[in-house]
Amino acid sequence: MSTVAASRSATASDPGLRRDRNEDRVWADDMRGVWLVVDGLGGHPAGDRAAEIAIRTIPRELEEAGGGAEERVRRAITAANNRIYEAAQADPECHGMACVLTLAVLEGQRITVGHVGDSRLYLVWNGVLRKITPDHSPVGVKEDRGEISEVDAMRHPRRNEVFRDAGTRWRTPEEEGFIEVRSFLFHADAAMLLCTDGLSDVLTSAEIGAIVDEYDGDAAHTAARLVEAANGAGGVDNISVVFVAGPEFTGPASPRMAEARARHAITRPRGRGWARLWWRRFPWLLAGLAAGMGSWAALERIAPIPRPPVPHIIPASPETLGRALGAAHPGDAIQLAPGHYAAPIRLGNGVALVGPKSGEAVIDGVPAGVAPETK
Image (cartoon, rainbow, N blue to C red; front, side, top):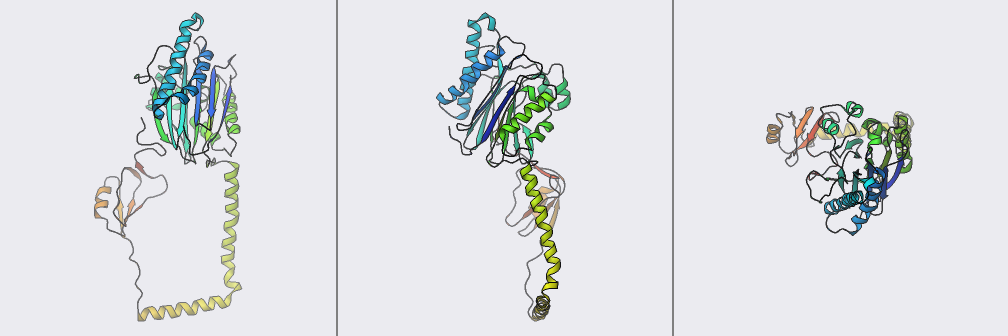
């Protein structure tokens, strides 16, 4: 495995305020680009043992398995599943033990995710936090479909039920309904968060995003703050996070960004103040400019200077964009009205596309940061 970006990561795991032991496990290997969270299923015997088997098996299998990233991810998770199952069959006290997990593997600039259950992976890019993995649970399916709100899902009495796990029976790597694999580009200015449901069941995505937005180069501090916030919200379950920041990622609400904005605000008025005073300090320059402008105007009356044509503005809405593209000529500009436009949009040579305020005209297609081949 090879990685292009030197990502910075940190892990944090805590039993929470209402559990006697921690059945979660975390793994982070920035050099190899492997990050993993595992949650031993609560209510099952030996959930912590199942999680321990998974955390020891998966990184080793990834190193030894051949093939592409998806194939290695499937093989590694399946090996963990089958070893958990074998251990449960050999020990009656562990019968039925299992876990859920989310694995991320970076190769070059592409993340391949292997996911089973209701742990999660969030991608943070361009100021947006997006949940990449679906929840393999009845309540999670309703939330992902928009049938219930995020807050209602968090409070649902069946929130902790899952219909996919690793360990309750023997599996094969390509078995349908077992491992869900997704893939996306991981930009240098992006970040990624893997977590167990001890975090996502008590903090909304907005609350998680607000903490990540304050990242200022210390991944361990961000991971610790997430766990602290989950405990502050009740700490009803084990809480585990793996936070991964690309080498160019800085939180938009971080002290570093605030300092940069402050420096910019201080610098800008100075430029305006100088512009107000230059004419007082250099009256001879003002006189020269006036004389030059008079000469230029006289010259232009004798021999007019050609000026570039003013671009023709063609208004367009989602319903009329096709006709506008067909009517545009080089030098024209198509002014988009607010709304959603279907991708791709193919512009002719020399034709510009102008939108309204940021976010009002949206070109629908592949979500930002997620590759077309996402499964």
